[in-house]
Length: 306
Image (cartoon, rainbow, N blue to C red; front, side, top):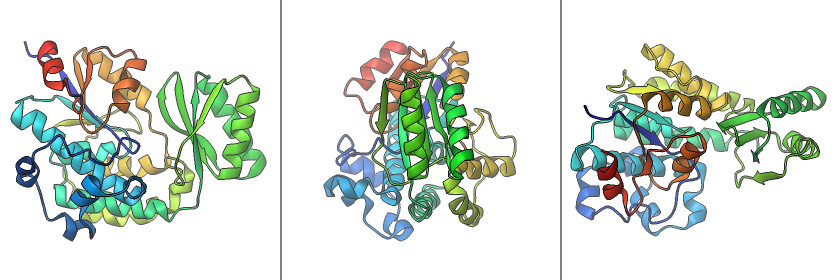
């Protein structure tokens, strides 16, 4: 009996100059669309020959990772003939999953995430911190107290594992929360190199504008099951799917819950896209049979697991 296969798609933070170098020009051209018409600039050139500071810009990062992940999906499914059962993506990666499950055409998806990035860039500035090896309940309570005292936003944004929680919000309130978390005993807190505070109420205004873009994107129900960030569940209709995508901007990514669901399948997990960030997070959630599509040993690793 074939093994159950889950594909997990990375979000921002996995981008790098040259992340298309593993693909031949022929393979890229085979799956190329008129990207410049979709987003207004030469994405392939930016990924291949641009500067890291440019590709790290949210409105560029999002289409860059989506297109790269799309190519990895085509390599996995068309070249290696792998048939996945379930897809899910971390934050932006959810759009890669939807694209690969034929919920949205790649041209529309590139335009959609580019616009999503532009809206996020226009939001009020904020900050994000990764808190390692500290209790989630305590983090939630501290954030709640700080919000009440300051009238500013700070809350858990990415619940990646028991050992890695990211908080986000206004610069002042997140700084206060970080100091209190340290006082409570957290040994390691890392400031993320972002100016956009995702998955918190700072994204309410972008989310309201994004609804219009989402309605223009011609989404349909995906061909494959997709676990959503907000609840680790599968949407039953298109309205629920859209609501999940809107809520994803302002609510935390419940990646730990998603990984718990993936573990129930007891199969193979493939990080489909650039880098291996999600591979490490999956292992920290107790998933053993996880491999990265961008690893130089990917094909042999996959053969050993199948």
